[in-house]
Image 1 (cartoon, rainbow, N blue to C red):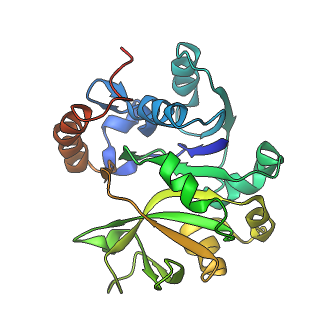
Image 2: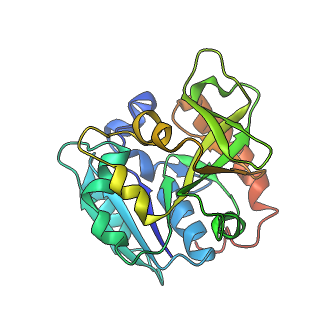
Length: 240
């Protein structure tokens, strides 16, 4: 299975830290976010991953040059940011095999069980499966409402008054047919793409750890919390 790992963000809310390094190389418990993601993807059987870059791309390339993996790792530089959906459109040839693929936001720190999520998607008949996390304060994320069969019947990106507590976790499994809907006017997955498929999306309720490390305070919290996660997981913490 293949995966898009969206890592090209500027990380403006993490300045001045991200003035000198890309957001995906910010460290949590001694390792860059990008490395935690690569370890997670490989542990769950991903064979190839495409990483988009923009801000300080040479640092990402330098890190990957020294990183050993059984996965095929491809980077694509975006001189101008294409948007999350735009990256998928520009690189649709990467997933031309017809098999479902992961889409992951590299600025979310998580230990989500991707194998279990893939099992939920298989045979579901939907074009997209979206990981959802129940949160106390979900308004900073996309919010989904599910029916009794866990189909997404409503989705609003960062609503002022959320209709539920089920927040978009930034991890998806998509069928290749979804790419046909990414026309030139579709740039963002949350704002532009997901609303087109409401009713044809399955919600996967995740219970594992999840944190967006987009701010300094969130990064500091992640440093404390992730250490506890490491103590309970077998796939992480094995690389130096």
